[in-house]
Length: 67
Length: 201
Image (cartoon, rainbow over all chains, first blue to last red; front, side, top):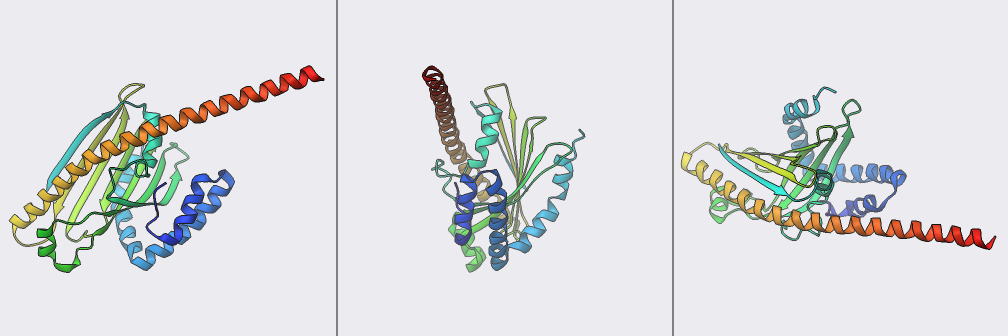
């Protein structure tokens, strides 16, 4: 298991790897909110938002496959 | 703009490669040490197509060349972030990963696309292409130098990445085989138990 960029989210991240399906989604939610806080603190959240916006074309190309 | 491209073949099935890909930067990979953290930001499955879309934030620690640091001054941190969006399409058996640099994005634009496709039942092709564009105004010579040094870095990391991922694939195969063996043994033991119970009753 690789590390999280934020030390305080590491335990949650590790927990996800060993959790069963029920626990997994709860832990992922907790880890996500921990991560969001850490990204905001470092100012990465806005960079991420921009990158997501720039990636819209790829989403269209790779998710747009007809069934 | 400079382009770096690279094609490799892994002697593992697409199922093995696409699964182990999530663990590419785990401790079994002792080559890609420049990747210090991997965080999953979002993960969804498109109900219409079954395509798994994942956003990850990859944190790298790799120092920039000294000449570049001297051009840029103190603003060049050694830690950088890459935003990766991946699409796993189980129907076409394709993994596509698109990555862009978050750090220094006003200076350099790096967009990398990696595609994993099955060559046959036992082999998977890895195709990588990176487009590198220096955006800073000023001398073309400096832009060229920045682009060239990043292409060189990509080439070095690609070699390490291949070696490291081979180690992860080998370990994954071994661990899965052991796991299957354990399951088989416990089924046999359970069956033996049932037989004993049946005899005893």
